[in-house]
Image (cartoon, rainbow, N blue to C red):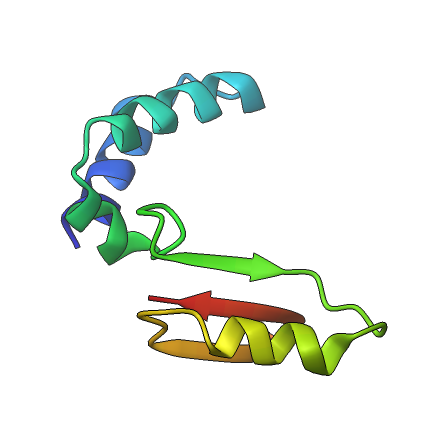
Length: 90
């Protein structure tokens, strides 16, 4: 995607950046320059079209039911990326 290519280009062009803060600042600058549509190609989280919830035991069924009832919800996962978390995507 255009977003991943832009991030990779920044990494390729900034091989001297080794500290976490430098890399984070540089990539944030790249991401800040992208549109929501471009960000969504990289991750729906970045465009605000998805969120994750740390699962809980208490009232879990009621919480999941409330998430599934959210207007515009397109996908609900109870595991994402091999991790147990509730993922809501619009």
